Image 1 (cartoon, rainbow, N blue to C red):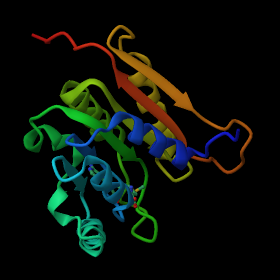
Image 2 (cartoon, rainbow, N blue to C red):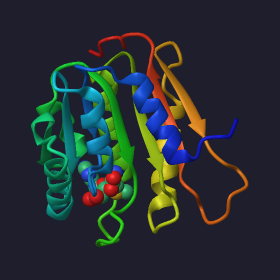
Image 3 (cartoon, rainbow, N blue to C red):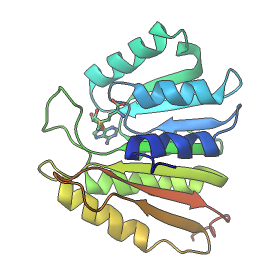
Image 4 (cartoon, protein in one colour):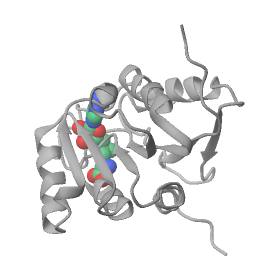
Length: 193
Ligand SMILES: C[S@@+](CC[C@H](N)C(=O)[O-])C[C@H]1O[C@@H](n2cnc3c(N)ncnc32)[C@H](O)[C@@H]1O
């Protein structure tokens, strides 16, 4: 047996948590790799909502879906993932975030701690029981460590009765390799007043 690499493991978790007919969310569409992966998993009876704040990313994601004739399975939104609850109202099977900047693009447009934690909070409410949020945390860029630390603090304080929180990380790799945080909803969260 080989330990799965980080990106491979993220896909394994998505495959395990998404069933045909599910709603899935790509919170950081970028070049659309995860959106396409999700569109394949949800089937024709499911649906993917993909978010990105950059037009370049929205266009790249739409083109990738079109190239694979799967554009009918996804809505690609030029909006921040912190607004997910405006668009998604049905229970979600899984959501994925790739934090950081879009490779090959403007490195100053990065995901930010406040909006990332806001989106996680909204998605935790939307998740169905057994649903999962997967965060691939890149932290080598400027601003990356601040976001990593705030996200870790936020998820570490989630109540274990409702959310199981996993960290999957290779500890002896150089140059700030990405790692995974996975959140599994195991029980409906109490309604806050
Ligand atoms: C690491 S890239 C995503 C890579 C992508 N998963 C792929 O397959 O290519 C991070 C993306 O998050 C986007 N982003 C930054 N802030 C955002 C926000 N508030 N909501 C949604 N996307 C955001 C960036 O524009 C960038 O494209």
